[in-house]
Image (cartoon, rainbow, N blue to C red; front, top):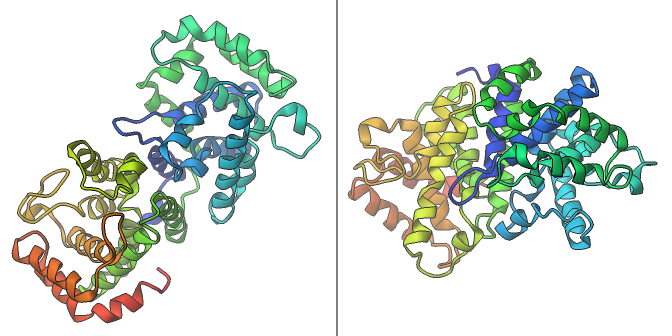
Length: 409
């Protein structure tokens, strides 16, 4: 596998989907903001490198809210720009996003754009805030002003009027002028809401990813998203990191190549990325899950697969990551695959996930000791749920593995 050939735009737009996950669908907020922002940037004739940063920042601008509870995320869509509590919420998630991106080697040049993407023009016009932040601010407010249940061309005039009313106060006047020019075209509005335009936009902007990422870059990005995933619930601190570490340890024992081990690192880090589709109230529920709650839980591996499979060269990683709740007898989820469809890599991640989960505290129980963990895992082998050859390696090296998870990936 050659991870270094992955196109950066393809990777970012795919991982951006994880920030859109709701209980029953995708919101596409980031994607639509990106379409709006690039349209404005084209009117302003922004240079290539700055448009690249704007595009990537648009796709990741709410990353600071990804690990927040659902109510906080949904409240970001409030439309009252002058409400003080909303302004505070905007600044908080922008700052959290800044901290996440600043620590990432690949995304640190996006950090300042995200930090200031809700700063008001009148209050900060004398500060050194980039034009990209100003454009992103306007694009974000345009997108959340669109009503889902009303035909877009019947509401466009009202949106233009409303956004323009904040020119010179909330928004930079030059950005608003560019927006008005872009918004004169019906295609501007239809592109935002028409799902078939996604492929066209992707094709038009794919050259922004001309410089691909290295293996080290991909792992760095995977670590960033693993941190977001693990922070989503107070009971999964370091879960993705530890699954990755155990999976790599087991894969080494199974003779995986250097390239395969890199893929395993990433698969372990991102195996629960679809869990951002599950409400915190379900993940942190101390009681027995009801039918609805369990249905929401069962969808998370589906979204892991659909997100990762869109990334160039991630076919194998997507399977290893997303099949961790599949069982050899076909009783797992979400695809109900049987033994012959489950590769060794997928089986390894499944065992690693169970081993880590049983050791962790959960809202309904405390973490289990080694003997209890072995008993449960042994029962799963006996019931033909997981691979006994991998479990044998796990049991033979359990103390070593527990030490290993405290080391760096």
